[in-house]
Length: 217
Length: 224
Image 1 (cartoon, rainbow over the protein chains, first blue to last red):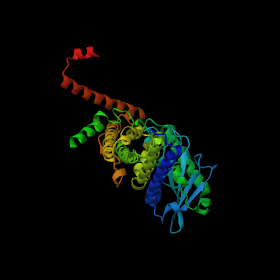
Image 2: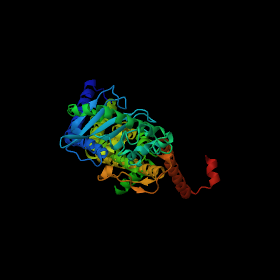
Image 3: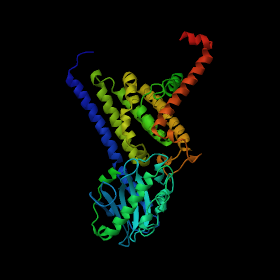
Image 4: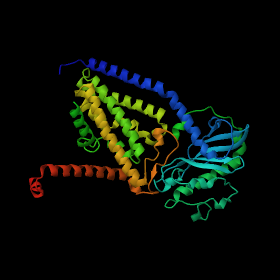
């Protein structure tokens, strides 16, 4: 090999770096809009199931508020609430909260509650529970999480908000008792919080949309 | 030329398969192959990156001083992977969420930098593209095979969630059983499945050799 000055290597490296950067920039230009639209659509789509059977107007994602820590809701990270309106009247609230004490870390979940306190739907957004055991909290795997639909703090009474094994009303999951317990506790805490803060939730001004929250999910 | 192509295909898919024989790129191979569709998605992404990186490395091979070749390979591969990641996010958002970090981690797939170093830096563009195609296909087919195996025996289904690639409503695929052998879906199952695949390949190769050379069993043992 001939002795080439080091600056020549530098120039080659710079040219290739420039080329690679433009390649990425070009691809980003082509895909940025679509990626943004996908993100929004996915968020909107992932909120729908927790609002089953409810009539509401417009896009749910536009009425978001964030409750920073510390708060009384389940979870040690900020809670997100989407307010749902029909004909400009509040009809329900969607909570994105975390059940703290899952078997393997927090369980991020979505809880929809009507203004009168009835649950419209519960969905698990993100979890690390054991595949085959605790992961039946996903609707793709089993219907377990659907049993909460229509229940409220009065139905059943507070003491019955537990799995059957603990003297409560709700079905358990065979082989996984930590997971259902933590989810039921999180739902109950959210219901209690909503009952206490119903007015202030709908009084707060909506935040302008930021994409940080989606990164967390 | 056609015979040469066939030979190279045999090498990429079987005799010198990046996953089965060279044992490269094991991290993604073991991590994402819990289902067929994940294997297919990551296999396809890796194949695309490998073809493009081989082409680019080969095209620039005359200008690149040997002492800076590795940073340049890294630059090229990292940019291509970023492009693929953006494309996945734009066109297959569900699959992107399912594969998660393993799309960006294609950068660290040694199979790609190995092909750049061993092959693309010394051969013409056309030949390097063919190399990327056969080696990438070998890797992708192995990902799909292991994904199908783990999904079938670990979960009792096949081709579930294919909608992540082709759109439409979420599908459960072909459901053969409600439950499977859970261990296969968990990380250890990936190691077992790969070990079984390698063992199966060696068994087949051994049989072939036996029938071709037909050395008496005892004599062969002694020779070793």
